[in-house]
Amino acid sequence: MWNNNKQDDDYDTILDRAKSKLPDISFSDDRFVVPVLDSQVEGNRTFFRNFKEIVTVINRPANHFLKFLTNELGTSGNIEGNRALFQGKHSKLQLSKLLDRYVNDYVICPECKKPDTKFIHQGRIQMLQCDACGAATNLRSIN
Image (cartoon, rainbow, N blue to C red):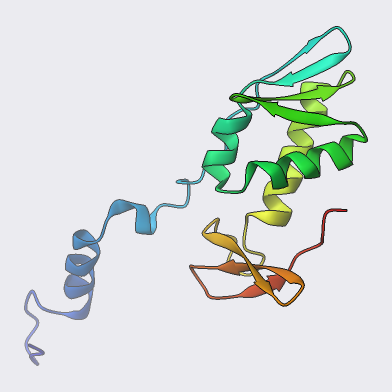
């Protein structure tokens, strides 16, 4: 396979051929896009209308994300169908900042910055394990 002559089978050509046989997703940095948050305030309640869609994209349990939001907002909330409902008036900007913080703290790997992570438990400690690089980091618990 390796020749001393400069033929098509040099290292770069072989590498390019191998890359071409892999799915495009392997080399794409923009494959993880969190949808824009869709919220609406009605009276003294705030509706997070695409809650389930976002939970599906970030691949996290809906109850975990809801608990994070209710703790950070200092209010009560529940899931109704595809949306989440919170007591009080909360701006779209405020909810978007919390979504960004949740994604950075509980979804993105702190080592390789990829979203290919999952929650694991080691005893009573919850950790974030990255499927891309194998790193495992302790997670801050949500009280």
